[in-house]
Amino acid sequence: MLKALFGRIWPYIAVVGAVLAGLFAVRQSGKAAAKQEAKAEQAEATIKGMEDARDARDEIDSMDDAAVRDRARQRMRDRSR
Image (tube, rainbow, N blue to C red; front, side):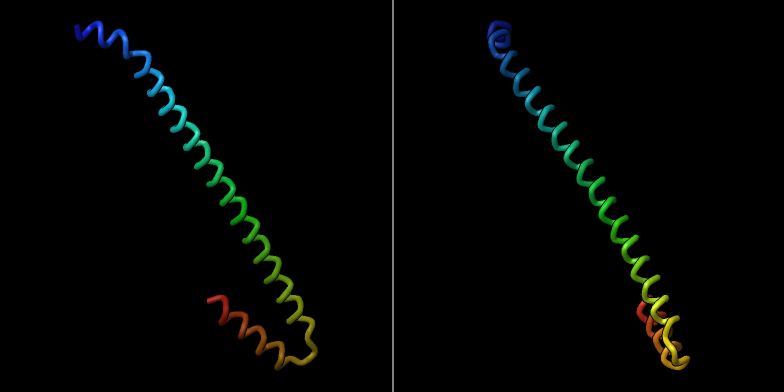
C-alpha cells in the first residue's frame, strides 16, 4: 500500500524538489550579481572622491594668497577626519 502510494506521488515530489533547487539557484545568482554591482559602484564612488580631492588640492594650490591657501588646506584636513 505504502509502496503503491509512493510510486504514484514520487514524480510530484521530484518536480517540487527541482523547482525549489531552481529557485535557490536563481536567488544565489541574483545575490552574486548584486554584490558585484555594489562593488563596482563603490569603486566608482572611490575614484570620483579621489578625483574631487585632487581637484580641490589643485584649486587650493593655485590660490594667490598664502593665508587663504593655508585656511583652505586646514578646512580640508578637518573635513577628512
